[in-house]
Image (cartoon, rainbow, N blue to C red):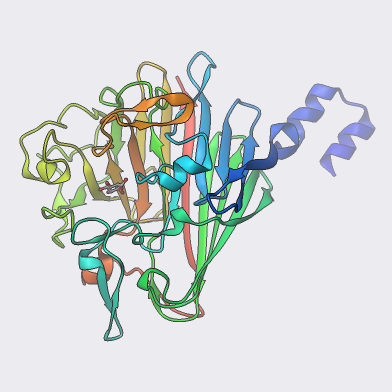
Length: 382
Ligand code: BGC
């Protein structure tokens, strides 16, 4: 309406463009082949772009964010997420670069949980525990995809049916993940799921960010703020003790902008649990926003490049993990080596091991209900 009125009134082109909806102004998307899995299943890539130079590529293998190009303070775009150039990298990979994680993100103690008195067992793939949904989680499947469009965004919606009993979880669970890119430089990830039997779930995205560019050294000088006054301490197998402990006075205090490397080597038992040799962060922070997606949950910036990431989420927790298990042996995109502490993750989630922890928010999903999760990564450069 507005546009045609301006057209008819003969106003200049610049005014016309300023009043156009954002997607008409500069958002675009395309999709094409990315390759094939070892058994010949085609994998596609969806490339989303905005007019400020942001570009996100999502592949159907693992509903994975494969690349994210973000301009620095001089306008130079660089890919800031770790990953691989081909499907085989993702198939062989064990670090979950950029993947959608399910059915249960993070750890389940002993790979076990009970629901309505019945015991369930998920394959153990992390010492005595299961991690990120067991030996073949959502990250190791090819998802269906179709382009999507919001009123101010372009995107891709991916779907996956996790069958009753898959990796030990009950219920056929339909999962939908939508990635969208806006003209406000936001990458939004929205999740939906439903089931035909009671089940548990904890979906997240496992992107590894390095605001200086993937493979460009470590992230120790990047400044992180986590709006969380508590975290969930862990035992030696990284299972929460059940306690919600204050961060005040510990290296887990990121309530003010703090260099990631400042306390990473501190002599603190929790840091040794996370990374026994040199220390590292790998904890669930209980966000003060408590699932209010309009409140800032985390903020990380790189003084060098000027890139800044702000996180908003409907989830109560975030796993801030400093790539403690990368050891410089993984070669990623463009042959770059990913070093120890070469990235950080912000995995928005319910708390780890919730099905076995009576005082944590519930991760149960019942038939007839819809699970939703909404996470926003907003980028800027100063
Ligand atoms: C976990 C780490 C784990 C990593 C796997 C993170 O979510 O918290 O302990 O090593 O995923 O890449």
